[in-house]
Image (cartoon, rainbow, N blue to C red):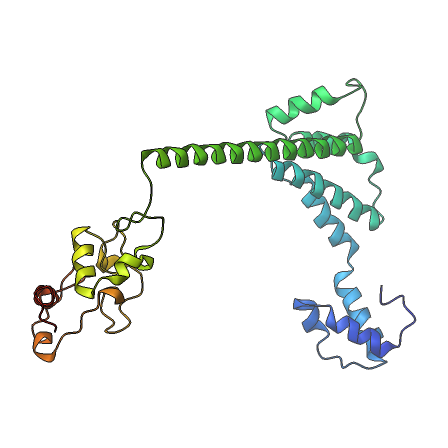
Length: 280
């Protein structure tokens, strides 16, 4: 496109160097962007790559050596598109493919699986006449369009069924019992948003969480604290929720022992002392 435009040679050279990659880019890399260099660079690329015999041979190989397939949208599309593109490219090179139809059809029909072959035979308006390649391509295009419509309807049906199942599942869950807060039983909210829980002292919160056998870190009942990925205490960075943090003195800290439950013996002692009126 650029080569045929009435542009200065330097500008054409700039376009050329901007749009080639790989081996072609290396081939003309030593040419600077000047008025005179464009013709030399363009000729060099034409000599290297405009080999019609090699191009035609490559296209014919691609056309004839397409893989056999099972009847899927992608496979039918690929056979259709590759065949059409190769024939158009060959015609552009000056190769006349008009009389290839009987031989080419014999090759391409063998790529079809049994189900698609039966559909093709049933689609023939004049089964005793020699078919042309355009009729075969039209058949393939119709087939993948129909398959796409069917697949889309199947996806919609599956989605509707899934939504119905989710609705039924939700209804069963609601019928079995509400999901209100376990502590206040007022409405649905996380424990750390519960007003009643926030009114507790840290030791009271800890006792309640322990009695409910909840995770000390995220307050869920299906987590083990040492496997919980929620954020740790912002005050001491230990593996428990900040709302359960108990302030302990230096003497108590010496008795702290690690525990997989998320708390330790020192915290348990602190809880007991706090509940009897001794603040640590």
